[in-house]
Amino acid sequence: MLALVGTVPHRDFPLVDSEVSLHDDEVCIQGEQVTVNRGTPALLAATIKAGEFLGQPAPHGYLVGDIGLGDGSRRLYEYLIQHLGESDFQAITFHYMQPDIGCHNRVLFVMEQMSERPILIADAGSMYAAKMSGKAMAYDLFTPDIGELAFLADEEAPHPFYTRGFILHEENRVPELIARAYAHKNAPQNLLIKGEQDYVANQEGIQATINHPMDEAMEAIGGTGDTLTGIVSVLISTGMEIGEAATIAARANRLAGHYAEPTAATQVMEIVSHIPKALEDVFCEKNR
Amino acid sequence: MSVLGLFKRKQPKGSSPDQSRDRGILVFENTSEVIRAETALKKEGWKIRVMGPPPEVRSGCDLVIEIPLIEELSILRTLQAADVTPKDIVPVSSPLLRPVDLFQTKELGRYLMIRAANMKLTIDKRTLTIVNVSGGGCPDVPYLAQEMVGKPLADAPSPREIGHTLCGYALQLAYEEVKRQCSP
Image 1 (cartoon, each protein chain N blue to C red):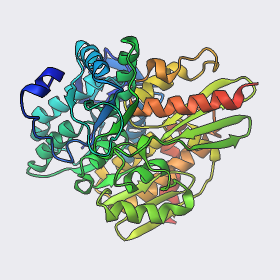
Image 2 (cartoon, chains in turn yellow, blue):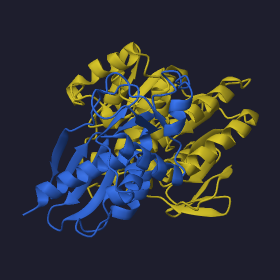
Image 3 (cartoon, rainbow over the protein chains, first blue to last red):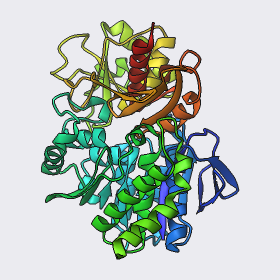
């Protein structure tokens, strides 16, 4: 089973720990609802849609309200420290959390003590915390965009806001940025880099490039990176090899976006509904 | 440690380099400002400490305040309310680092997307309505998007007003750049 850890943008949303479902454009968990627009709700929605197609059980969510003050995130970190050790998830995806090195390291310590360590995936603030703490190599997959890849490549930067200008985040420097991130041990076992072109990479460099279909507007749409992280998380939780899961997820996310006929004003839920069809088409292509 | 405490006992050992990487330093002109800032921040419940400046920080007074760097935007708002402004804010781990000051502009048909650091803000050029916010990873990003998307640029709250983190700060820079490019 897959677990997803993150925050929702409502300060009074309680800490919940339960299975997650999707009804129309709302994620439902433990009697609470949250509208899907971007962030962890978009990750959850994509995960549920992809899981339905793949015949996977509903994901387990650890969620809390946090609007950036960090109060909710810190409560959730403490909760995970107390309870995560009792779980037996195959994979855990850490998402929008206030980056806090001390809390992050304590959660990671708990997971490293588990009899069967889950596959660890991180994106968004959780990925920032993993890199800042120097523990990126403990993870199995990060899903950065090009700007975040530059942050991983900059051994000095504590946050993408401080990425040094000479480490330009340009598409044609992706191989160099990947090499630099690994040289400083600031990348995990696998990378799925999202952007104009998506790249699957590891310590040996780029393993796959996915650039079709190409819809330029996707970059502007908030949540398209979250849907990609959701799809790859589900595929990995089925036991699929991480590189293969990342390649399929990148292709499916692009297709789902393409089917929504996106403009820069498209909202992510319009894309989420196309994920099952996109996955079906990718698996058909693969089996041809 | 308070300002007075600093003179009474030896400064505690700093945390390990890894543990300090999410911390930042507020640099002020003089000790009086440090005391006012410390009082205002502690009153609001911030976990801060007053310490000596690292050698790389060559200007300002002999005391600085260590803060949680990620929450820089919230902290600046608290200080603004107390009418005390730091002359600089730098990461503890690398005090010479400066915030990203490069913008990338992309025309997407009738839309304009501006990227600052890891944050992207997209606007409809005809109606000057904010149509999307993307990128980022701190929890105020979905909140900021929720509050800003669908609103005219002139009416939308600015990230500086309602954001809390460095991602919110990066979005503020993109927002200011959009306003600059779209002003008559």
